[in-house]
Length: 435
Length: 91
Image 1 (spheres, each protein chain N blue to C red):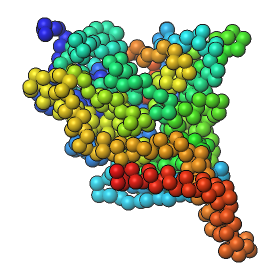
Image 2 (image 1 turned 60 degrees about the vertical axis):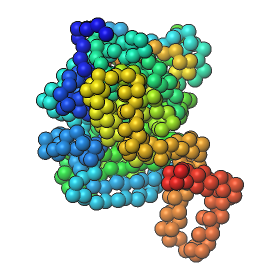
Image 3 (image 1 turned 45 degrees about the vertical axis):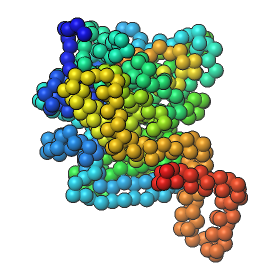
């Protein structure tokens, strides 16, 4: 190949968790890594629910807890099933010695990661949009931005859920509405003491609400609340095909959740200081793109690496970025940037929790799409109805209450319906645990 | 919720030209116009009198929902230029 100006070892598109992890891995091995970010600063276009996971951040930044801008360490999960006007909460609380996750503000945290990467030699080019990949002889050899072309031996795509670049070179098909959720979020300013009192936590502790049902009963959508230092993030994600009609708009669904009697007191008198929206990849294992080609690898959201069952994304992004970076280093040492050489990225990723977990839950979304009217509506309501019955004190003998509840349930779902639900759950659990 | 009030919490640097270009001909025959409903920033509005899709691209949050949900798959969608568009301080 002829020598070109503007040529470097590795170009990374996107300065999110995946991109930074990839870039810093390349730089630490002594090669040149240029990150091209479309935002004014790293993080300025990035949105998520709320938490980064300690274990995966440590893989890149072992001492991040001493200097990164963190909000609160999460010590409690509250799985909350919202009915029309009631709710059931199952909560788990433990203050681990090493916290599992921290809430962060991406505008601060991603920026911090990018600054750390710069200290280690990564070159960050901001306010620059990569419009397309430059392909020569079926090999990716660089990127086209609005201003100029840059060339590299390897291009790592960390350009987020929309990844128009992966699509451009045919690594993936266009995303379907059922394989992505649109998420809206509000950051609500609240006095620190109020947050501590309402969520029953101390200054540096955080509490996560996972919200089911409510305004999304019968729909494939979930809500969340994360606590920050002096604000609370509340939002929801709803599968895009749910909005393919004349129903409520995403922000109207969020408004309804905010007004639910279980949620309203938590955010009372708070002031919205930031509204945001983002897409969440939900296609899972079956919708992952081809992860590499000659001169190119795909990481993070761009590769659909989100485990929506466990609300994980940034950790999958960082691990995939790191492995893509390691693969790039091996390729640079061998000067082999072929499809075969970079396919090691997928092989290595398959050996980690990232792809193993996506594989474990490969059937989850299919089942949920099939059964959402039942699982996300009837059963949620029944759980609340059970506890309403169980806690009622109304002079009716308990046996009569139980029987009424059970017969009502059977009548509503029907024997065939119940059998079909049980079979769907059995098959799903089998695919998760056995094969 | 007041969407306008929510959008006013954000810093925008709008471009002079829209980065969202629907095919108006397709919009006229589109049955559901799901972009109107799905957009979290209320960017799209169908003007019945003018038979035209109004695009308030200045309010775009750059999520990409409209591109994916477009029934006719004919919405030309690209990211705003590097210096333009929305900025999330928190995210």
